[in-house]
Image (cartoon, rainbow, N blue to C red; front, side, top):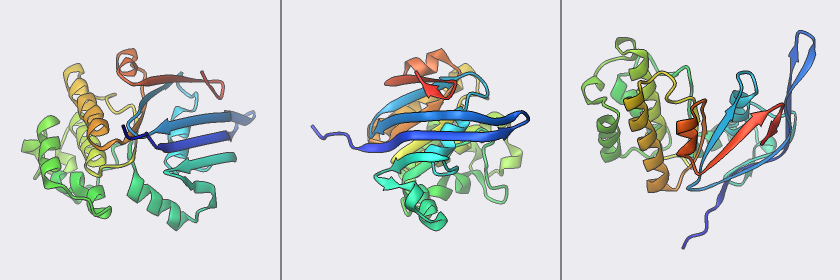
Length: 223
């Protein structure tokens, strides 16, 4: 049996922002590990810092103090260009805002990150389009799609890149229950097929229950 490797590490991570009444402490010395092939649900009240946690994990935001490692790389020691390289090679993020490229077709949007990483797999692209009911949308543009369809395109794009670390911020928030289950099935299949680590922010107890682990963020600490 192959031993799982550590994909994401937080050591004593702290983060605060300036608020109307002073500094607001979002993370307070958080320690955290996530290994390849592992799925984890992150829950917490609105404003508890879940998105901040996700952005620090993906190198999109910097912690005030502490160590963040992605696939063994200490992000705090890297330049912006080097951090971008780590993200391109190892990390995919499903944002709540979709972040699709308006000038590209749905098919090209799905393949975009995989092309950047040099890992285009046509069979996987077809499989994802079928799983997420996007086959008839591939030649359309994002503006032609509903919000739920755009969310499915964003999820397909992230999975198509075969990342080592997949970060998802409420990936099923705009989907009906049946579609949400198909999306979750696709995310979990990626973990099974590639050994990726999945960190998923959710408010849904049912979705959290399908993950290997579940942690709750409250007052800057994981519980």
